[in-house]
Length: 320
Image (cartoon, rainbow, N blue to C red; front, side):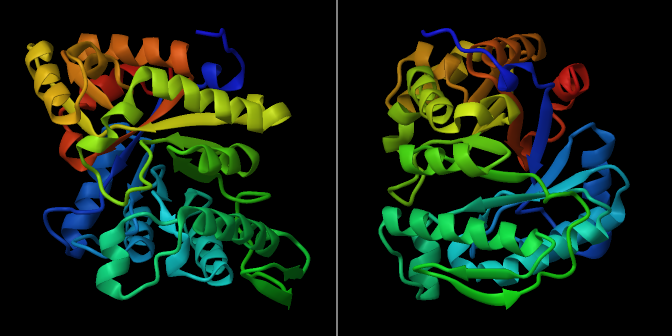
């Protein structure tokens, strides 16, 4: 592997928890969950943006912020095709202002085919969606700026609109863009503050075909794309990874064998994929330290079902 160093490799560990599908959706339960996430040391409570059995992100994030004091909130991620960027910029700035500057703006081009099909939304080719996302980023950043925005793009036009309110975090809340393909990661390297490494979702579903794109070798290739596109921005970036499986166990090899069989990987590949955490607390902590040294991955996004099991790992590594 080519030796890589710089900003992403020096970041302290942060842990995010994806809370899109809580067991109960009512004011008391959601507030209690947000406070539990905060008390366990997670940095950010995130909600995704899909049209299936999940809470809607904007209202849920604001409620989580109201229930906590230091916990950050974030969309992981807003689908660009579901909202005009002028509207999303206003929502994002308001979330940031009312949360006291605790909001992280995750943006994506959209990928889940079932969302589009069931809602009757047109699903354009990936290249079109990514080009539209690039314009959306320009509009959103322009709406956060002090002066009115004039923008004349292929997909969006804005004629002298001044975005209000302005976000508390300046020049804007941290922007998170994630993906697994070169075009999207190149855009992220040029425009985002936090880049999320995921598997390539161009197929629109999560299934066994994603296995080869989840390996350590594939991750190294993605980081190479990011560094090449980032140029002088490299030292300013943070790298994040989506953990799709997190199991605390004393028999990591048995779980790794099952994971490997389901995704067409070898057991060794399953053990070292950055998208899974399997083992004892000590083993998982050692894996995360090694992956930060190897890949620069300091922010870990995990699912709600791992909230308490990973708490000892969060307690040991968060902020170090």
